[in-house]
Image 1 (cartoon, helix red, strand yellow):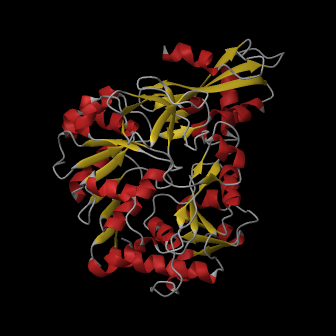
Image 2 (cartoon, one colour):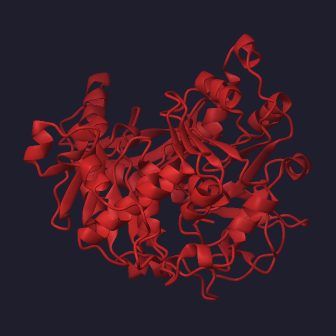
Image 3 (tube, rainbow, N blue to C red):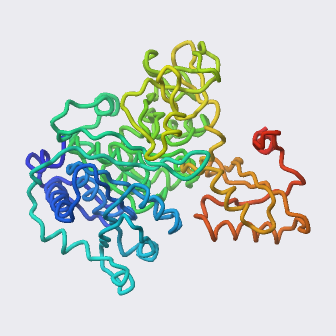
Length: 511
């Protein structure tokens, strides 16, 4: 279950198709390309346990790099190319990446990333004079000069995704490596589930409409390749283009976030009915809670083909729910074995069905937050169970329901936004004495970022000052992390300990 197997059994079948251009990478080409990159990494001096980083748009050769690292015992860290240069550089340095891969499409962003860990910078699709002066080299000729056969010391690598928290900067989710090639191991629990529940196999044609730097799109694409199927990658999500792709490529499986469902439902009826979606057997969604009304409308349109799962980058555990079960238990995110999922109170004691508490799993694999023992320990209960930090309850039938977000994390368009980072940026504005950031309802994105600000003496609230504060934030952070609007407060509600009572700020918008 890796590129080499399908390069032999299905060499000319498509492994990757770019939805807009129709450009195809066959299984044989993916195998050879990832082998070439693996050899190049060895030539660069990288060995088992080292790390590379990828700052790319949804590119034809994205999976070539990830598979190269995966079959070389190397960690690969995908980076959101919408991050600021400083934010991206922090992740590159923190993960210890020795090689950074990028492309001409995001070159203006990439050339500014210079960290002491990096030894080589490789750019696809051409290297500008500015990039060359910063040390970037052309990717294609370096890769083409390597042999297409496997390296001699193949072993399983891993993806080190970065998962933020409510305080501080993002931390890498570091998992121990297996010391043998992944294809020599028995299929794991998630592979068995994806085969038995979702029906993944070599005939799967999987539509990936989301950015590949996110955990689920990248990981599920790797799974499809393991099964010998085809991944159809959209350059970016567009609701009409997604329907066109389902029809054009005979999509059998797909994965979405609820915001995409909302935008699909907003299409005119004549557009929704203009495309043949008869090949579409399974639509999977996760990343954010889906309003039941939205999911009902999608099932009315697409039929009972919508599956949902609840999980996280850390990989502690997961639940899943099919369309039939969901219609019987609307709002649930699925059922897990009662011996592996637990609801605990604030003292770490188990709660009975129907009572809300912190959701924990008996970990299916060990992990740590790279360089942060305190955060790693904070995710564990006294029994050794692990939590993503979400609140929920289990009903009498064993179905899990989420009731709150972890520490008021904002989920906007399926993207996690952590308020502390934005609050820190706002506090740096000379007019701001105190700031609280939280999510408020948005009809399309699910939530949008709102800031409540207490001003320094001598400043008066105004629309102009609110706009200036927002602009200031965008000068220091990615725009999606910054508030769309600002409320002014005489005094933000804080406890004597200094903790912000954020529930009071949120309540007027969510009541």
